[in-house]
Amino acid sequence: MKPLFLAGHPALDFLNTAFALPPERTPIELIGDGEALVAWLLAAELLDKASAAKLKRRSSHQALNEAAAEARKFRQWAGELIARWRSDPNDDYEPELRRLNGLLERASCYHELVAAKPGWKLVEHNRVDTASELLALVAARVAALIALEAPDLVKRCAGAGCVLWFVDRTKAHRRVFCSASACGNRAKVAAFRDRQRREGA
Image (cartoon, rainbow, N blue to C red; front, side, top):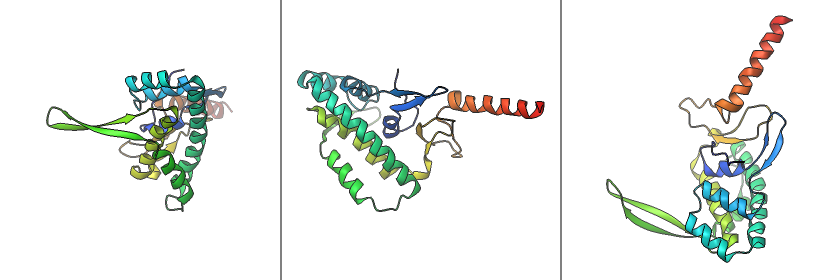
């Protein structure tokens, strides 16, 4: 299945790599192994093709699979952290900060100044030499979410059985569904059928 990029933030898109597909609630795992993790990072534009190719040449399947297993554990932990931060952003997060900063220390990056029209553009490039460094790419986005986004605009879908996350960037901040065409449409159909039942009764 193709990755879902509907959250409006890469950290939440990462959380959305595990979900249940309604209406049967079939569990879907998008980073089941190392190859899938690299593919998701490429699709999310957190890793470029050249770096991915070099990493695959240098890393064993076992190392990549171990990185994917660590990513799945981090996803669970990050989801719990973000849920708690949403409800109480001023709580004490010292242990969580230590863990997150430890992952951020794995990162290696450099900046490049490039000509752009108009003016100039500063581009950040991530150097990824080992599979264990892959998680730093995601950890940086989780840290950015917590540092830069308003917690009350980070939401979970209100659709029945849906667990997907998103940032509500609508003007009135009234977005409640991950997707208007999916969960939003299902909610409308369910409400319509409920009205029909009540009117029939």
